[in-house]
Length: 287
Image (cartoon, rainbow, N blue to C red; front, side, top):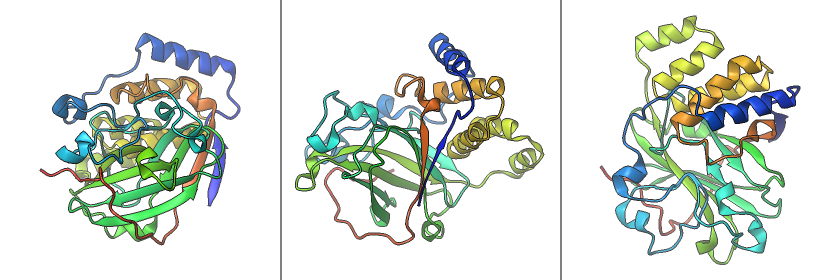
């Protein structure tokens, strides 16, 4: 099931102008990542932006660490992917690890206009490289924010304090997966401490965004902020929170400044999982 909404429905041009000014001037809170950036630790390019990673000579495959939330190259890969790979961006921290307290977290991406005839694949694997979940769905034919919520069938398999490796692949050539445009990251489920749980229970939704961010609960912070934006909360209250969250993850330069005015495509992934082969370049980090 796919639902389409607009994050800034009913808000005027002044909001977008203010957001651009905030991002350009570097305003907003600066929050240090819980661990060093993946690119700093391993010398890998940005992995939150789309780019082909199926090559058997891929450096990240040899080292075992994901390094792509965004992509290399600016030219379309094939006719089925008539967009720049850099237009596919995973909204995750720059250390690539998104922590959550939920057994069914929501992952967000900024996507280009992927053709409805083009398949998109999502895969989740555990630290032993065992497939936890996999599915495919069609592109939505328009650019904007896309959210994927893991189905209930995954909940019982996400153990606390374990890291899981996920991939989102746009399949540009069904006969040659080396042309896939891929973003990837790590997901870790944690248990909030009692003090944080009490603070959250007493906080407003606006206050919860900052509490989640300060406690490295990335997916909760982002999901709460998206829900607030959808409900047309005051732009003056939300803009500093958006700016601070994007800056803390080094995402400001990776996504269009006007992305909040674009559609939000909410995809509910199917409960059943597909059995997929293990491609080259899909190794899980080994500690």
